[in-house]
Length: 408
Image 1 (cartoon, rainbow, N blue to C red):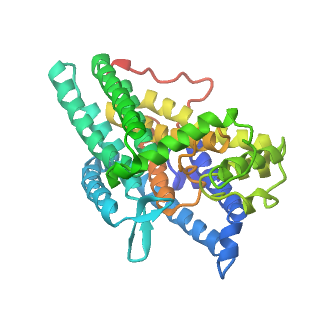
Image 2 (cartoon, helix red, strand yellow):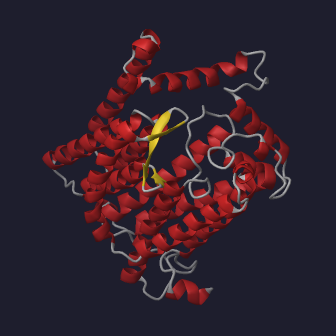
């Protein structure tokens, strides 16, 4: 194992362990949670084989990406941004619909989500723009303006079919700008404008009948209905009656309740056969049912380790771009994780966000592996520049390197 890490898996060893651990957990839980897909397939092993194939491809991609200098990723991201914008426009007209939302493109029999490529490209380009800001007001305004134009364009295209993805991307870039020390007057104005926009949008949905709303904006009625149903369910006497509208939430709660402290062990889930989307949006409910409270907390800790390590990486970066990029990519993974878990535990309305690297979904898995590859590549370069013969973490009797906070 020591030789493996030193010779092939360069970068932060702890992140490699988290990455590989999530992949192994994903295979175990997909084998259990995809039972409904197995019943429908002529080959019962096909859903798991497909999932393992995507994970294997993702591992190969992550390994390749982590060997690429981040300055090349910085350049290629602009091409990715241009391509993703075209695909997002195309998916609005020719997209494959599922659950009343056109989010997928099918080309040559391959189905993928352009929004996943858009998220990756936006984060990298935003990190580049923020890193170019110097100490004068003119520079700050120019790059802040360019970041906002890009963000509004991409989030606007995603928003028409996927509110939660657009919201997560906006929040991540907003935090990146905060970390990059964009002036509070700009950030405050932006936050205020977004709040006003959301209030006006909610008012329009409540005031305009759905039949009179343009088709492009009809998805908004689904969002508002989910929010209102979630906020009102506690006051209803029949909140435990299972209907088509609350089926996912109720069976998700039942799965979590059955898990107890130690769970029923992998492969013994009962609710996987009743819970819609058990293999994607609600896979965390199946994890808790099979692995119990202990397993559920362990999964949370794995993602928190990623966020903690990202903070350590930022403190060891000698320039702004890799620091902002690592934090942005880590926040995207962790924020999406906790939104998925919050949906599974009925803390927030259903959003359709997968659990990164664990839920079924080819595009999501491959793009998440690229996230890890970029982060690991940055740690590899830090080690090569500062500690070529040591691991990323300082030993207990060795002081951490002095960091010039002004450079960040």
